[in-house]
Length: 347
Image 1 (cartoon, rainbow, N blue to C red):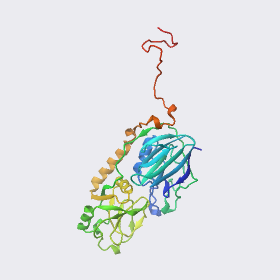
Image 2 (cartoon, one colour):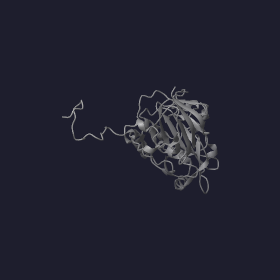
Image 3 (cartoon, one colour):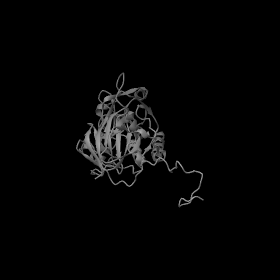
Image 4 (cartoon, rainbow, N blue to C red):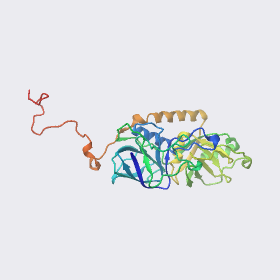
């Protein structure tokens, strides 16, 4: 069996893929990776299908021992990573030999880092997906003693890297009007877009707290709102008008008013904003939102072609002899300009 044996791990580490679509009527939200772009980046770096499961690491990774030779990729929030003590580049793919120890430390920026295996993580499927969904009672977080078994891997390429997409420092988030936006007065919606928020300390895979100065953002008659369907990206107001952006494991219905909805392509930026990072929201039309989603999809589809060879320091290569650094051999005594036939005889 090829995979990674978990020696120790952070408190919020779980197996994630694209989640479960089509189960809202059964009370199960889609779930899946908090940063879907990171899944696509790992697939591009390992030259494999984008729907394979990876290990999502919130804030801190862990320590792993290779059971067999395998390939890995590291994406998402940059974390300190070493292989048998040698540093590993982030947003890159690497070869790991049996018995080597991989250590992944704290996030240097952002929140969610991802560890991908060549062939994906071959965990059991639950309701059609491998994603752990704690809110729905599907699976559990990864623990010491677990084995992350790799699926069939027929590709051997490693040593690729991708440019880092700048989504770990907050910034501008595009939103569209939702079914309940009209419950908020026009001046309230305008003030919401003019407010600079900070990501609060309360944040997980269900929602992200937004903090700001001044009064809250109350809706008209919000105490009389009936429960309605909820999707990731909805911005929900609590009773005191404090906003929360709902994330991948949000509830499926709710009675708190929602002022708008974050574009799916911008949701990873909210998920990856660290505590205290600033976020601002910009209203866009539905047509502009659809255009943005199309362009984001096209960008994801181009990731494979954007991979470049990883430039590595030979001093840190523990498997240096496995690399063909020179394509030919030069003799110290023979005249290099004297042609020889296939038998080595001078012409």
